[in-house]
Image (cartoon, rainbow, N blue to C red; front, side):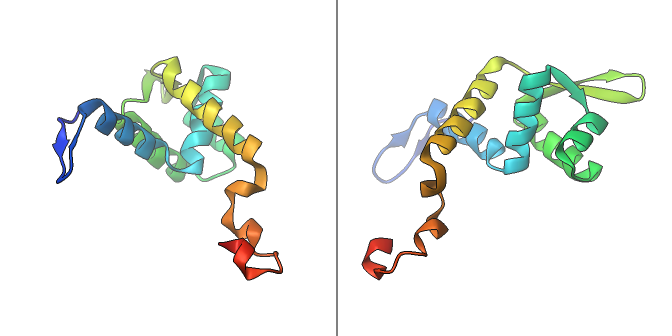
Amino acid sequence: MSAAVTTPSRTIPADVLAASELLTALAFPLRLSIVALLDEHGSRCVHQLVDALGVPQPLVSQHLRVLRGAGLVTGVRRHREVDYRLVDGHVAHIVRDAIAHAGHRGTAAHPESTAHRENPEENA
């Protein structure tokens, strides 16, 4: 993917940059949902993803393009449709762990959950 980048203080290794690109591609709730569905079902065509997610087809297709561009999903044409699947299990593992971690953190992950506190210093 990317070569190492030199910053004023140090060089960022290429594998760290590649990991950053992967996480950037996943950094949208709908993309995480798509990956989770593909992990659960193995493969899905666009209309199955649209039905499961309840969002418009162009939006699903747009996010699939991002995931394909990042090398996270692949598509196989079957007649008039394309079946999408994860390239490997690594990305599914990352998404499962991220979702589990967010669940363990609960509302603490959302800064707005501190707005109800009476003492403003507690919100810092």
